[in-house]
Amino acid sequence: MSHEQRFVERLPATNYQQMGMAMGVAPEEWVFDEPDKVRGLHAAFIDAGADIILTDTFGGSSLRLRESRYAGRATELNRRAAELAREASAARDGVLVAGSMGPTGMLMEPLGELTATAAADAYREQAAALEEGGVDLLLLETFFALDEALAAIEGIRRASTLPLAVTFSFDRGTRTMMGLSPTRMVEAIAPLGVAAIGANCGRSLNAGLPRMVGDVAHYETGPAEMADYAMRFVQAGARVIGGCCGTSPEHMRCMTAALSGGRVRFRGQD
Image (cartoon, rainbow, N blue to C red; front, side, top):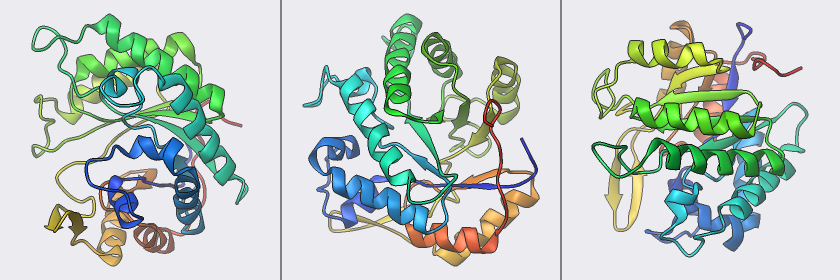
């Protein structure tokens, strides 16, 4: 990577809720139900300065979708989500599309029922569909269990050679909910040839923790404060900057203004 920064879009459900999505609806459902709104939110983040946009597929694995009305349609959903992001990316030269893949929501054996084989198969299917839809890179994000992430990487590499970034959620101070430290995460993930390693969706600073007003989550951290923390992350060595829960296009606009700069190149990209 270079020593410049890229700015990453975020598509949290909170943005969709402000656009009319009901509480309890999975954001991935809008890929088919409201494609114009999905494409429009991508466009809003690009206009705000994002140069990596994420597909609306965080919960798009076959394991996450199996109890939804899109059970059995993981390949179709992921491919279409990638196409929507790809279409939006044409608004500005140089915008990359990252295929977002979140955890399954299940515990791995022996703590739960998820086997390494089943996890790898689910991520292999998702990665293949995202690549078919036109993504430039793949992103495993918000992981908390190392064994699930390792299974996911193994499955992805059976389907794709695209650059892969991996981020964990350190929401227990400097530990994930499964007790994983950043040092142990890097020691395990870095040798696997990933393009980037990072953290997202910790306790703070996203846009803070939400305050519920009726059925809508409101986030207290404003764009200016978010930009201040983005600058601190860069000073600490971060090269890819974005937001997570509660991040709006205006948060992105303030961050890109505060950190006006160039590009970061993922390994394997021209």
